[in-house]
Image (tube, rainbow, N blue to C red; front, side, top):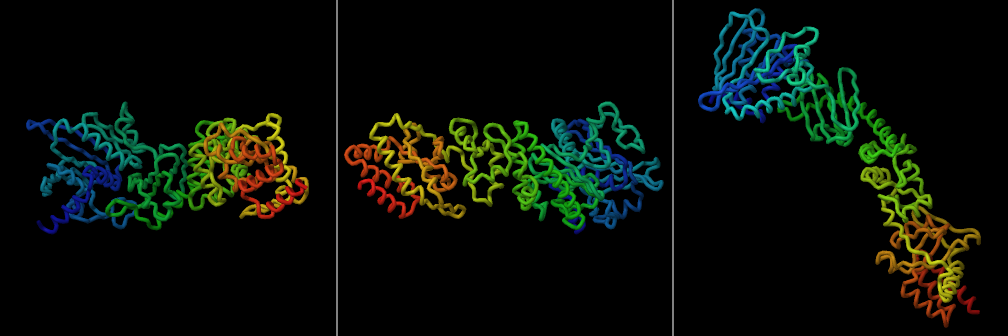
Length: 580
C-alpha cells in the first residue's frame, strides 16, 4: 500500500461511528452556502436477499467546478477553509468520511460556473470523472451500501438519530426521510424552512430544533453573536455548537476546563460561530473565543441563580410539594466555590425552608438560634411539638433541606440532627404522686444542688462563657422525678436527664455537653424513678434522710459531669449544715 493510500485509510478509519459521514457532508453543504439540505434513504431489494440501500445528501450551495474537484475533493488535506473562520470543517476530511461506512460506490453530481460533473467512486476508492451536459445545481452525493431488507428499518433510525445529534441546532434547515416520502418543493429564498412546511413535512422531515433544554429551570443569554441556554434540574451535559452544528455534547467535565467546579453540576448549550473542535473531535479548542463564550454562560448562571431562589421561595410560601427539588438545586449552587459568598450576600432572610408545621423559615432564623445542632423531623409528633414550643426551629426533613443545610452550616461547626437524636420525652411524675420518702428525698436533693451549683456554676467552652451574678438564679434549678420505663433501653439506664424549666423535653445524655449552655438559664434535672441507685437512696432515706440526699446529690453531680471540685465542696458544706 502506498503512503497516500495508507494516509487515506487512516483518515477514513478515524471515524469511530461510520454514520458520522452524514455530519461531515452536512457541514460541507453549510460551508457551501446551501439554503437547505435534504437527506433521504431508500432500499431496493435484491435477488441475493441483501439489496442495496441508497443514502442521498443534496445541497443547493455553490457546488464544485473541475478545479475544485481536482485540487480539493480528490486530494487529501486540501481545503480553502483554512483561513476562513466562518467555515466549520477546516481539515478537508469531510468527503472522505463517506468511505467509513464501507460503501459499494459513491456517486457525486455537482456544478459550478457553468460546469457540471459526475464522479463515481468505487469501493477501492478509485474514481471515474465525467462532464455532464445538463446543468446541476449544488452538490448531490449518493452512497450505495448493500444490506439485508430486515436491517433497513433500524438503519434508517440510526441515520436519523446520528443526523439529529449532530445537526439538530443547525442554522440551515435540514430535512430527513425515506426517498419515497415525496419530493421537497423548491426553496423560498426568503424562507428556507418553507420548503418543509407541506403536510406532514415539518415534523416528519425537518430535524432542526431550537436551542433548548429539557430541564426544571432554564435561562437564556445572548451577546456578541454568542447564544447560551443554561439549565438546572437535569443530568449535567454540556453542548458546544458552531453554525448550529454539534462540536461536542458530553457529560465529561474536562470539556469545561477551569470552569468545571463552577458549572459542572449544570446543563448548558453554547452556540458560537467562533468555536472550533479539535482534529479528533473529542473536545472543543479552549482558546480566546472559547473563553469569551464561557463568560456568556457565567452571565447566564447569574440569572439562573436568581431564578432558582425565586422558585424555591415561591414553593416554600405556598408549601408546594416540589420544595425539596428546588432546595437541592439551590444547594448545589451554594456548594460551588463562590456559592457561599453569593448566597450570604443576598438570601439569608428569604423564606427558603419549611418547618414541620409547614411554616416558612429563613436561613437566618435557623443560624441565629443559639443551639449546637440544627434539628430536623420528618413528621409532627409529641416530641416535635414539645421542642417547637421552646421556639427551637425544627426543619422539615427532606433530602434537599439536608443538602442545603450541610452547605449552609459547614463553617459553623453545627451538626444536622433528627429531633429524636437530641431530645427524649419521658413521663414526668407529679410531686403529689410520689411516695412520702421520694418527696422528702427530692426536696432535700434540690436544696443541696441549688446551694452547690445554682449560684456558682461556670460553664466555658469555645463558644460559651457564663457565670450567674444574683441569687435569683438559684431558684431556676429544679429537680423532678420521671418515669423512663417507656423509653428505649439506653435512655432507661441513665440516672438523670436535663431539660428546660418547663420540663417538657429532656436532652439525651450524649447531647448534654453540647446543649446545656442553651439550657442553663431554665434548667430542670429529671431523676429516673426506676434507676436502681435512686431506689436504693429512697430506701436509705427512711433511716438517714440527710446522708441519702447527699449521696444522691453526689451521684447526680457525677452524672452531670459539668461542675468543678468547688461544687462538691459546697455540697458537702451544705450537707454538714443540715446535719448540724
